[in-house]
Structure formats: structure tokens, C-alpha cells
Image (cartoon, rainbow, N blue to C red; front, side):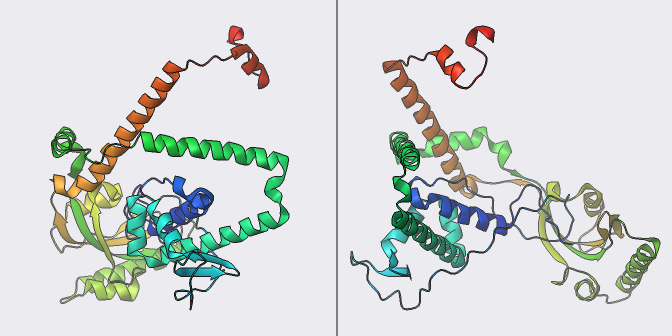
Length: 352
């Protein structure tokens, strides 16, 4: 029974699901894609942190095309064909345009895991197949559908235009502006103390009977006895008896990410010391402290990229609000509130 160590951190699977969902949703209007940067992926392990509900896993997309031999092909426009299904081609330029429409974090994720881009291309091909079927059935020519598509197009065009008029200049933020924001928010860049941990985990179901509890406790006692023997190897014992087989390594954890029951024990340990067995709702945990990092404040170079993105995003939102406010000021709207309220059967303005 494996659970995430990290409070509020998205595992890599969630990042992949997010990117795949973004790809599918963005295809008809790829240039409009905007996704929030996902948190950096962390290593999953046993329940050293408070358990969180697992994110739903997306079904793996079924292969719809093969790229073997496609790289040498050419599309009608002369571009290199990267993928094909039936008579449908996806060119290198089309893929570059799709990737360019994503945020910096999503692009970085593609660079770290090429399989993510392969999945996105498969979704692009699947989307083209759907559009091909739509055209064959003339589904989009139905009056009700055509009206919905017109509304979607109007919203998309307006959104693209607003993005353009609200884009901060390339020179923003300046070094002085960046430094001022960093200084004003220095406390938010504080990194808490971190601990490098390893553990031997002996699982125990919540509804375990006395026999199962006795068996688990005996296993823990046997492990303790072996650990106290001269020359005991914690990693070897973890591989032999625990459920975490990589020597029990959990990696670096901030103190705020560790479950309180374990954090109390860990903070009292010396380097390379082993805590007494800790019983939690999922079983027994025997924790070893490998190393410690003191709390520190991240420097401006460390946070520059994230800070610049945040400042540009906030400036874009401000420019958008100002533009819309000025537009409405120059063109004051007139709304019949009484008639509007009656359309949805709500209370009239006088009755509110």
C-alpha cells in the first residue's frame, strides 16, 4: 500500500494526465492553449506523509498510427511528416506550433520525457480522425451545432486578441523590478529544514485481527534485533523485509511534508541514527535519518524563472482588466435587468 510522501505535490502521473488532457482540449484551437504550470514531480513512497486521495489515472491512449518510415515522408506543403494515420499527416511544423502554444513548464516536461510528446501526437491524430468523421457526416452543419461553433469561435477570437493586447513588453520585468519583488517576498522563498530518510515498512491492514497484528509485531521485533547486531546493513534489511526495495530510500523531504507522528521522531535523531518503530494506520515504520539540510532562503537566481513568469502573468491580468474597463467606459453597456432576470426565472431586481 504505497502513498505519497508529499502534501499538495502532484506526482508525475498527474502531470502526464494534465498534459494529455491539455493536448486533447487544445487541438481544435491549439493556439489558445493555456495551462497552469504543474508542480515539480516528486518521488512516491510509503505513508510518511499524511495520506492524500489518489488522483484518477487517465486511460492510456490507444495507438492510432506508426511513425516508422514517416520521418522521411513529405506532406503536401513540403514539410517533414512526423506521424500519419490513413490519409492524415502531422508535420514537424504543426507539432512545433502545438508545443510553442504550451507554457514553459509543459515544454520542459516534453523535453524531460519524450514519451509525453508521443502521447500528445497520438491524441492529435485521434482528433484529426474525429474531425474527418465530422466532415463526412456533415455534423457541424446542423443549425444547432453551427450556432454553438460560432459562439466558440467568437470567444476564441476575443481571447486571442485579449492575450495579444495584454501581453507585457519583452523587457518586463527589469532587473530592478525583479529585485524589488524578490526583496518584498523574501519570506516566501524560505526553504524549510530537509531530511534525507530511509525506512523499513511492515504493512498492517486497519481491520487486521489479533493474529495479524501479532505477526507484524514479531516481524518488527526481528528486524530490530538484526539492526542492533554489529555491522547491520539497513539497506539490505529494507530490501529483504520491507516493501520499499531500493534500500528503503525515501529521498529528501521538507519537515513540513513529513507526518507529525514521524517528524517528531526524526527531529530527535542524530545523523545515521534509527528511530524506534512507529505504528501508523497503515503499518509499522522504522525510520533512518541519513542526512539533514538546514533551512535557508532561496536566492534570486534560484527563483528567477518562476518569479518572472509570475510577474508577467500578474501584469498581463492587470493589462487585461484595464483594457476591458476602458473599452466599457468608452462604450457604456445598456442592460434591461428586469427582462434579463425573467429569462432564467430568478427574482426580479425589485424583489432582491
